[in-house]
Amino acid sequence: MKTFAAICRFVPDIMERRTPYREAHIQYVMERRDESRVIMAGPWEDPCDGALILFRATSREAVEAIIHDDPYFKAGLWPEIQIREWTVFMSSDDAYREATADCPGNTK
Image (cartoon, rainbow, N blue to C red; front, side, top):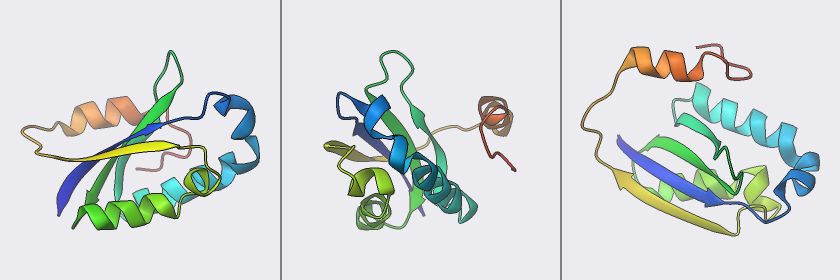
């Protein structure tokens, strides 16, 4: 498995436009997390103009397939996505647990 980072740019009026798709998007991402495909995901804080999603996958094409099935992508809320393979040099389980402790729906 390889690690990939997807940098997703939001449409300018994301806060209003995401409402009908938000629950389905969160459920979709949580399911990919439970499959160990999504490692971490979340929007930029200020300004909220995009998001970062970290994936574990066999190929870039596998990441693209996951993204293309996401409700936000299907609704056109991500007009631009950059996918980069990432060589992980170091990781900390403690840092991951701390970073995700307050995440909605976190069961891991």
